[in-house]
Image (cartoon, one colour):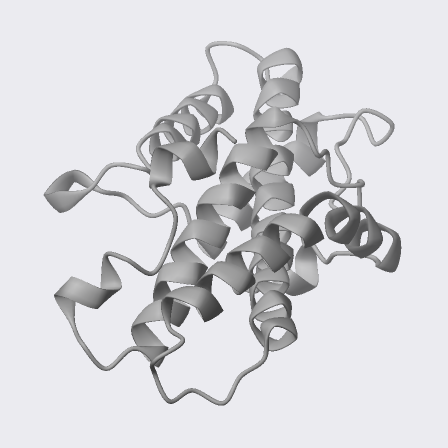
Length: 184
């Protein structure tokens, strides 16, 4: 499954994401440079900033997919006849979707096959004018902002691990404190 093709970010959406997160990405890049000034890396602040912005773009595609799936579930609840096999399949898919964030042995994947089944059921029951669009513009709400900040946090830690030679001591100092970072 390629969320980047099915739920691609348009040029306009890229500009919105860049306007919203470029200063944060620059600040995190600057901080990475400051905390790793003794290391022998050959990157500039702009390189790190672009890498972090690309992580936000990927997050935007995945967020568009998530919002599409959730809006399709809402429409299926409206239009799928109750007490039918289709209703049971819908409930099963919703249950699987609700378990997507669990870790360990009970984790279940909501992958391409489940997405195809969801789209097939929606095509069968949801009127075309009511059907959510995969090409809908990304919604940059507070939920997405927190999600994107987590992605930037994780990407900055990954960059920090790549450019540092010292392992655990140095890695902990690469990024901001997570709480201050996420709720800045």
